[in-house]
Length: 427
Image (cartoon, rainbow, N blue to C red; front, side):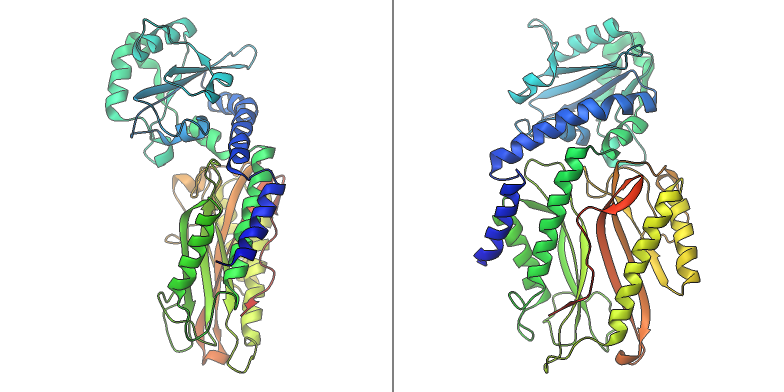
C-alpha cells in the first residue's frame, strides 16, 4: 500500500531519532526529564504551590499522570501517586513516587515508600515531613485534564492527611502551567510530527489516492488512517475529509464521491505511540475540471485571504495579554481589511485541545469566559485554526469557505512549527 510514501516518512522519522519504536521510547524519557528539570520548578513557583500530589487508580488514571509517567508505565498499577515538594529556599523540586513504578521511573523519581507501609501511610508521613503550606491536587471545574482526582481518592486523601487535609487546594493553575509550557526538545519533536502530517495530507490530496468520480471522501479518510497506523502512530482527531460543491449550501459534505470542480477540506491530528504530543492540521484542495482546468481565480484570492488572516492572528498574539485580547484585535484588523473571518485557535501539544488560552471558539465568536481570559505565554504551542468566507461569482454567488489550521509556537515571536500550506492544492 503506497510503499513509497511509507518509506519516505519512515526515513524521515529514523533520521530524526523517532524510529524504530525504541528510539521513540528514548525520546519519551528524554522529554520527561527535560520537562521535570525546566518546566516543573517554574510551574510550581508561578502557581504558588510547594507541594503537588497526583494520584490515580488502575483504569482510572489522572490525565496529568500520562505526562509524568515514562513509556513503560502506560497506566497506574493498582494505586499510584507522584508527589513533588518544592524547596522555597533553593527552588529545587524533590520528585517522589509512591506505589508501584517501572524500571524507567527508577532513574527519574525517588522511591519513598517503606516496605511496611501502604501508599496512604507513606503519603501521610511524607506530607508531615515536608510540612507544605499549600498542597495542589488535580481538581477543576473548567478543564478535564486538570480534574483527574477521583472523588473517592480525594475523600481518602483528606482522611489520611488529618490536619494537613485543610491545606489541599485545587491545583488548576499548577497543572495548567505544567501542561502548557513546552521545552526545546518537545518543540523540535513536534516540528517533525507536523511535517509528516503535512506529508500525509499532500499525498492523500493527489491522484495517487483520488480518482474523481470514483473515490469518496470516506475512502480518503481511511487511507489516512491506514498510513498513520502503518507508521505505528495513532490519531486523536479525524481524519475528517469533506467537500464543498457548486449548488450545495452544505460547506462540509461528507461521504461523497469526489467530482471534478469540488473544493476539498481535511482535518487531521496524529500522535506518537510514546510521544505525548499531538498535531492538528487543516488543508484545502481543488479537483481540476475534466478538461484539466484550474480553480477559479476567486478561490486563489480567498485562499490568500485565509493566509493573511493567519498572519493577522500571529501578529496580534505577539502583543496581546489574553486570548480574548488576541481574538478581538485580530477580528478588528480582519474587518478593516475586508475579510469575513472566524477565529477559533486553541493550545495544542500535550493534549490536542490543550492547556492555555482560547483565542475565539467555533461556537462562540466573541468573549470566551475563563479560558479566553488566560494569558498568552511564551513556550506555548497552538493550533492556528480559522476560516474565511466570501461569495464566489464563478459559483453563481455561492458562499465558499476556506478552512485552514496550522501548528505554531509562541516564543517571543509566533512561528509555524514546520511551514504551512502556501497555496491551494490542485488535484
